[in-house]
Amino acid sequence: MIVNYYATLRQLVGARQVEFPLTQGCTLRQLVEEMVTRYPGLKREMLDQNGNLQSHIHIYVNGRDSVFLDGSLDSILGPDDTISIFPPVGGG
Image 1 (cartoon, rainbow, N blue to C red):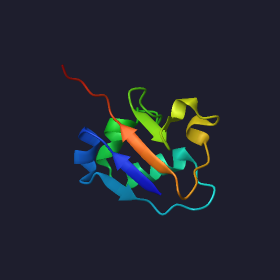
Image 2: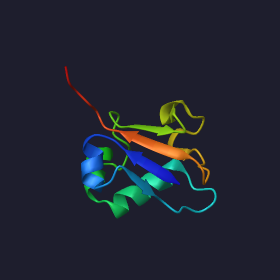
Image 3: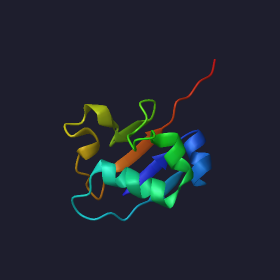
Image 4: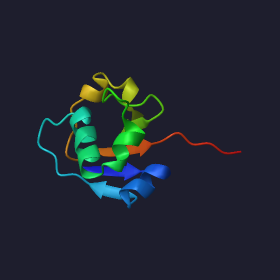
C-alpha cells in the first residue's frame, strides 16, 4: 500500500511516499498505528492524547476523505489503495 505525505508530515517522514506492506483485512486505524510506530514524530502531529486522530488531519483513501467512508478509520483497506495524508495548511 502506498502512503503519500504532504507539507510538514513529509518532513517528519523524510519522504514524499512510503510503501507499507500490510496484511489482508487491515483497517485504516491499523495503518495509522503502523505509521506512528515506524515514524514516532508523526504521533504528536496526527494523534491526540487519547490516541485518536486529530480533527485537523485529513486522510484520503483513493481520493476520498476518510470521514466520508462507511467505516471511517475502521474501513478495510485493499493492497492497491493509495492513502494521502494532509496536515493543516495555511497561507495567503
